[in-house]
Length: 216
Image (cartoon, rainbow, N blue to C red; front, side, top):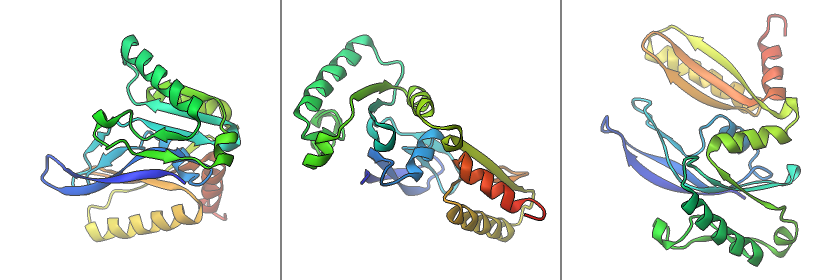
């Protein structure tokens, strides 16, 4: 099972809201998270009032047993060689122990030293640990292991209506479609256009496009 914590944020617009921060992503248990990662939306706080976004620089573990992938993901690609070496040494020691994975690097990161425990079976079946610096590198790594139909697909549904009630109905319809087709949604709220992006595997997005096509 994936692990996350809920944190409260206050947007510059004044809106207070909560957002989940993932420290362990297990796509075998939560397959939709694969596409949230590929869409660049994992650990991104989105203000529900103004839509402002903020990427949360939190490291996390990415696990995909079906593709024999286990990666520690450091969110910054511009990390210095000294810091990279320190991270590699710490993770090498943790991996050799094969008992638990830290959600953060240490108590210094402010998380109280929480860890994710693994069962003996999970520890035995662990693939080699890869160290990834930057989400772009993780995306490239994931895509290299996916078939074309498994890769990220997107579909935009748009309306130019300015009526809030109509936009709300439009969003409800998009959410229902996403739920039925095992997809996720992302909202782009512009003054002259309201767009709901549906995203997931190309297989599911293709099926959705066929369903929406005239005579589908």
